[in-house]
Amino acid sequence: MDRVWANRAASAEAAVRQRHLKRLWYLPGTQLGVVGWPPTRRDRLFGSWHYWWQAHLLDCLVDAQLRDPQTDRGTEIKRQIRSHRLRNNLSWVNNYYDDMAWLGLAIERASRVVGVDRHRVLDKLTDQFVKAWVPEDGGGIPWRKQDQFFNAPANGPAGIFLARYGDRLKRAQQMADWIDKTLIDPETHLVFDGIKAGSLVRAQYTYCQGVVLGLETELAVRTGDDRHAPRVHRLVAAVKKEMAPAGVLKGAGGGDGGLFGGITARYLALVATSLPGDSAADAAARDTARELVLSSAQSAWDYRQPVGGLPLFGPFWDRTAELPTDAEGGAEFVNGAVDASAVPERDLSVQLSGWMLMEAAHVVAELAPQD
Image 1 (cartoon, rainbow, N blue to C red):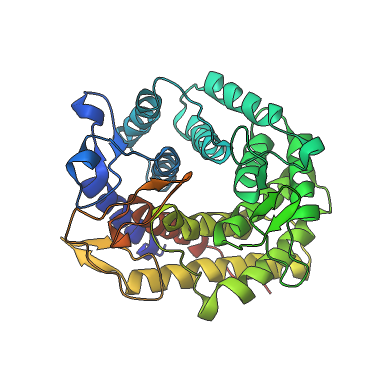
Image 2: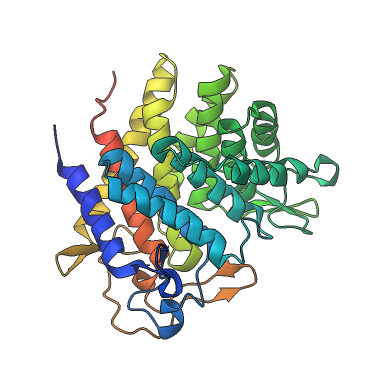
């Protein structure tokens, strides 16, 4: 067995573990990710913590547990879940449906992989998404509570979650159909960001493509309905053409954007490993998804900075990573999103994305290309 990608994923995990994983407020039995490295005092005290970044940290820990099961990591996963609630004012919910969807996806996977019983949390989050569905207002579910912005970053992951948990396939299909009807660019076939007050927000981000690939693949697997796989075929081809120059997924900088590429890689890997079907189009979509993950991962690895023998990834996987030397100039929360640090490599989001990419490469590396 080729261990290259498993070893690289393990190195990415070790880097995040060494630089970012700390006790929450020095309390025993806790753990969260410090959002910057080198950290400011505010970072070390978790004055900033970024709910959805921590959800992806949890998801990466689950990836690692699938790759290399360890009792200690299982304990860490439980600590990460417990500490998330503690830092979130003893609550699982917040005002952002996309944030809650990412947490729901990570906890649902942790429940299956590690055996933690968190059905009450998952039921609570399910209730949030089901009640947020407002087709009469143009949705979809909104980005956040009391908002009229209906977007792919909320509906995509919430739909994947509902497909996987609680037998909510009908609603997940309704969400996928809403995206397909409302947010697909007729020219490029990419996914637009969202719709606000009836007007398209025409920005096209990599992670919007990723979550829709994940949702449609999940539904193709779980429903057998023949409308989902062709959407995957179309979108994989569009991502390759529009968002992966020379085969490497586009970067989106640091801050929240630091996670975009890793999310896309995660769900391209799901396409490669799970999209059902024996047609030439099915095989081509799986092969293309696999190739995009592996070529992006190879480039990100080639352009990493080794620091203390461990990788530091850049926000753009086709250029050399820059070493952050100053704790100042950190990411800030502005208007519902986290902007980038002065040196984006400092951001936990960027490093999680690199780790996610290495885990995705490990998952697809063993797949043989299909004729």
